[in-house]
Image (cartoon, rainbow, N blue to C red; front, side):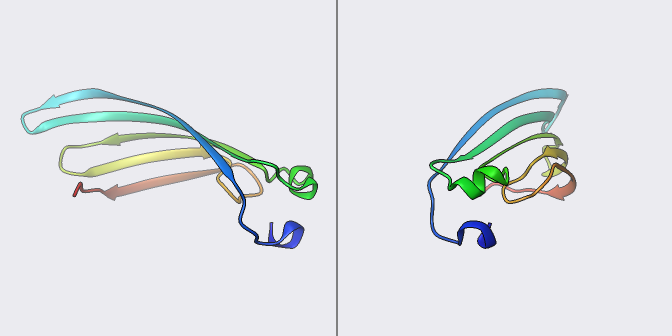
Length: 97
């Protein structure tokens, strides 16, 4: 992107659709599945950015979370600033403040 149009600020729109559902009820909460689709679009992108297919991106994320904060997720699609579709696998821990 820097080589095509520089690093100037630009306006971008983000859309997201998400769904969460309980899989297994537990005494201290539940194991849940989550799915989301995310779309990013640069508004008024320069012609070089459009031609290089760098003006829009979308990807899907599917994950499973446990009440203790453990999670596993899989993502597929084109992430912002990637030049091609990719997959990401995650294992981790999350907490809420």
